[in-house]
Amino acid sequence: MFEFVDPEIGFTSSVIRDPKRFVGRSDLIQNCMNALNAREGLIAVYGKRGVGKSSLLRQVQQMANGNYDIAQKAGLAHLIPKHPRRYYTVYYACDSNISNTDDLVRRLCNDTDTEDGLLRLVPDQGKKLVEFSRSEDASAGMDLKLVQWGVKGSDVEKYGSVVPNDLVQSFRNFVSGALDANNRIWSKRDALLLLLDEFDVIRNKDGLGSLIKSLTSPTVKFGVCGIGQDLGALISDHKSVARLIEQGAIYVKPMSPMETREIFVTAEALFGGKVKFDKKVVDQIVDLSEGFPYFAQLIGKSSVQYGNEIGTNEIDAKIFGEVLDKIRTGRSFPNLEDAYQLAVGSSKERAMLLVLLAEQQSEATLYNDDIGNVVLQKTRSTAQGLGIEYIDQLMPRLVEERYGPALVKHGDRRGVYEFADPVFRAYVKLRKLD
Image (cartoon, rainbow, N blue to C red):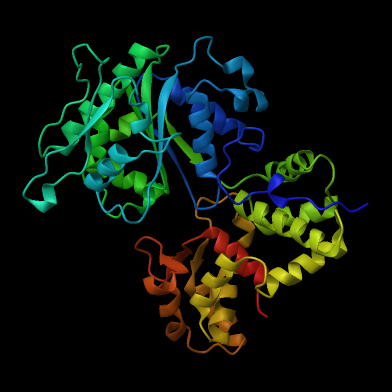
């Protein structure tokens, strides 16, 4: 008998925080455990878009707070230290409005998020906030907060102090003060862990490597999450950062087919057995999603939604065929469809070219570090056979920033590109042409 179910119970396009919903990645979980329990070092989670980096970083935060459920689930209970290092954690997702290191530090010091913000670590007892004095020079002005603690009626102890117009030193004092103050009130933890997600959107990373290097100590650890070339930018800014990353470099590749199937086993359990996916349907989704958990989750969620629409909890081959028809006609994933329409415009030839590029080297997707790379020259003859004569006139819209871009230049090799978002590449292959 049909029962309406909320698709979000089993599938989500959001970052996964609950260890019960997180699947696979046992090797990465082990690496994260090792990095967390090292006295010093930088945790660097990196990989292509859509592979689950942010969800893994949230599991790092769980373990840092002392919750090792994810390690036990991964069969790694025997590797959990008897006395694991525990941290106060700060988690901040960067955005494109952060243009440089100073902007980032300002954001960290002003973030009032009650679960993840740095200011939540300021004890409420005897707390008072005093605004920073501002510089007359707008570029050096700060809108941070000076924090002082102390029990009413006693001398105020100043754990955080401001050095006027010296943002980095003020931040250092602020971080050190927060750790010390919390350890005076709560059960003592070993260090403060600052996790910076969406690290790749910061436009100018100059000075960030030096900042991380100068602050990293047995009591302060950083974790950054971004795409691979951003780690290179971090290292080039301060060469010795490479030594900090040695133990904490966590490279997240696309999921194996077995791990992707586990997404659906977990989802069915979360649905309490009310939703069933045919095994052949799951196998098809595994192939279509190409190891990107985000895309697998989207397809699973869309399937359950469609089941609700027509009154069934059984996702069999026939039902899934109708789901695929909705995806192929651009009716299921509005964000990916908007990106597709922006890339191709009104050109049927450009749409055909984009599909040809997306389908190039598809067999190497799960195993090749150059996932998504395309060579324009390899497509020319095929394109000409389909009546696409002027590839070079169609390419600019695919690589221009204002239209996405769908493709970005890969290194210095002429005519070699990669899809800016591998999930978009998988969507183009699935969608094909109307």
